[in-house]
Image 1 (cartoon, rainbow, N blue to C red):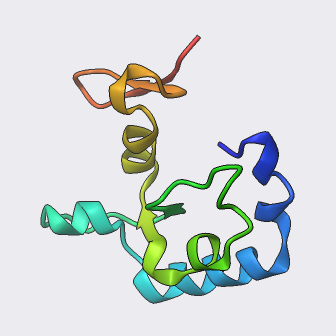
Image 2 (tube, rainbow, N blue to C red):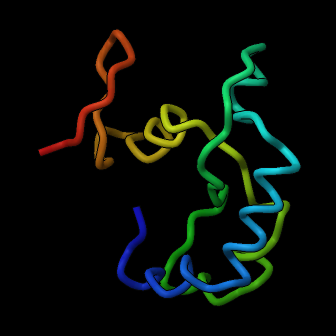
Length: 99
């Protein structure tokens, strides 16, 4: 779900390398693990979301302390908070793209 201002950031070697190393280190969805489930992590997520003001700040964008490995479901839930996200999750946990 890259926004226009971050399109170049996610393709840079520094991000790709950090995300790859973080995935190898953590392996499982950190939110699912807190609930006692082992689900493979797939998406390296910024806890403090990137914005036009902070995406060039390495203390935010490239700081491992600001990262979280999530499964697709948890990542979609994160970005659908408040009903304004790109995805909708129904009561049975199925994901749908908001139209």
